[in-house]
Length: 464
Image (cartoon, rainbow, N blue to C red; front, side, top):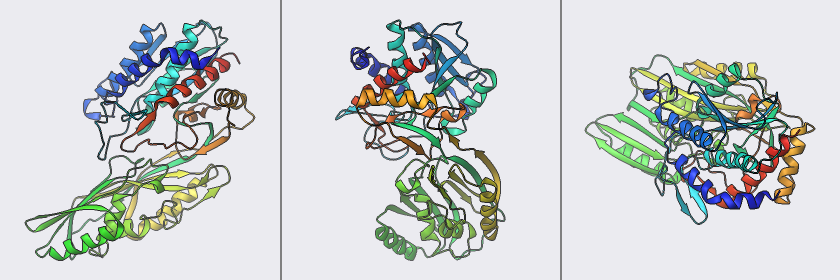
């Protein structure tokens, strides 16, 4: 079977279906949630689109209470199935895009849209891989099930629901990371830190501080409002600070208050060093003006320019997945009301979780913070001798002619819900990964190449 030729015959239809899927603004929205749309109406629309498309193509489909759905091919009486774990939800499209993030646009061989690489493009590639196998009526020993998740970016409640009601797959992969193969994923500690006793006591009173929308994104916008009669000096100092740090900024005088805004650079929370955290940068400036505010001092002293948690006392590294990383993702402060922030901590496989949380508590209490909420995700590691590793390596090497090295990641994919599941594509080695960034894109030739790799790999897995 020439998988590349099969993809070429279907590439126009693949691109058309993908463009329709990308046009759906499938961001989690609790305000529109209902019994049949637990993640909101737009994510429901994306799930309905994929299941309806699959049904029209002759797949067996199932919608599990709006949380998650799947499409399946292969012998219906087969006891085992292979799973391809995808997700249809996307993160908010922050930043200044060159085109509408939900109106897909092709420029210089790249398809630009929120979700193009994370994870709608790879999802459609995997779906068309199954479609090629089905339309060629190839013999299958096991069922093949492509799973469409809806809450990957906000807690993975969809997969938690799935494993409660569905039998475990024989094996499988998530097309939601990088090629060749990611066989180990860091764990996570997600914490909300709450500051008690927010009081008005500063030389320049801090009225509000706001930055970030998602804990797993580096915030690219931050703003603070301060109140005092004489504000011209702040404007001058702030401008000097931003120019020195090479940051875009704005200053707005509003009667007896001043609004300071900083533009940073968004990045995925698993790689905070690749972004510019607008929240910590703004706090760094404010720390020089409001020295008695513990909220600002904590951010400036313990979080700014420290992606590995050294100042928090939690730095750690192992030989499997490398160093621990910390992303401060959401900042909220209102004088005399509330103050909190979130940390997305990506933990190497061998991280001592309990001791890490203990060390964090030791540091934050000096600033008056307490841990209001903590959620943990354990790391995931698949041994290189597992059969799935060999099959996926062979498929990648055959279709690309390149060595299929094993990789690790700080990201968390659905692969961790399968005992021997891995992440497999769709970003190729040496290519930019624009997941969670503005102007997200997928290279069209890479999209088609990934589809061929997936088709070969899935067919061989289904005949284990």
